[in-house]
Image 1 (tube, rainbow, N blue to C red):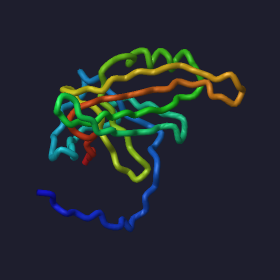
Image 2: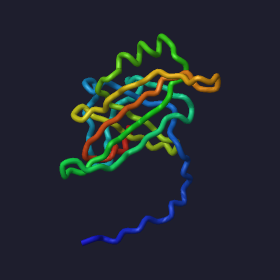
Image 3: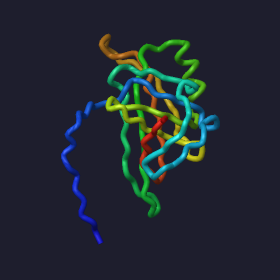
Length: 159
């Protein structure tokens, strides 16, 4: 039986896009999260103890794609952003995370925080370094963080 449900007009401001920063930890160092529901995680951790990565303004994007694999429904979550200018110190830091399993918190401009990965189901961190042929093409790192599991990226509350 299909239940009828309405999506009503949302009268509050909707500021698009994401902030330029994420907070990240290796999955092995991530704390346990309290899952309140499929879409809500609450814990009392302090993000100031996490590593912070700042991205180029307006470059951080997030997508969740529903999929079905062997009869199981799930979501592929992909967070991508650019870090400007190829630099030795940035490469050293990114190499510590390269091809490793991580947990990430990011925030959109509405103030909503989302969580990608957990100790049990971590996200994969990869990056490439690139620049285009024209002087107007950016010299940058493109970071990709992705994770697939049964649930959407939960909303996260620090308080």
